[in-house]
Length: 119
Ligand code: 5GP
Image (cartoon, rainbow, N blue to C red):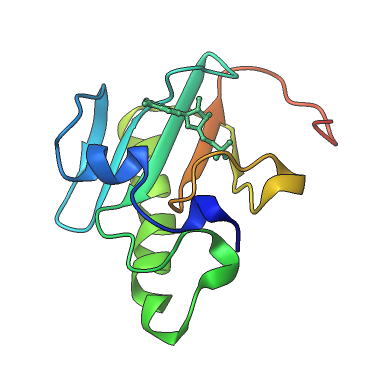
């Protein structure tokens, strides 16, 4: 747990609608928006509306099981709605994985040929 895991984060402001984003999907529990610095022709971030301690995936507890399932379901719904075809789903967990925003988010990357491993 770093300093960056305490206090607010930019995605908190987005979830509370204090900051404008290019919204792609929203329901009562999650929202999705275009990444400001896209790493593929389509780069969408999916976040829970409430962080509830989920600064990173490895903080997940029993009470988070439902929202984690909902986030994964939302990915499927978004790729269907937007007809994205094949895609890559990424979660960066911690500094060594290049996590920069300490509010759980799923990256959907689509519309280009991926390589494995990415880096
Ligand atoms: P991480 O590196 O934590 O896995 O991913 C954070 C992502 O959030 C990055 O891809 C970055 O471009 C994106 N990002 C950071 N700040 C903003 C913002 O204010 N708006 C949007 N739409 N994306 C952001």
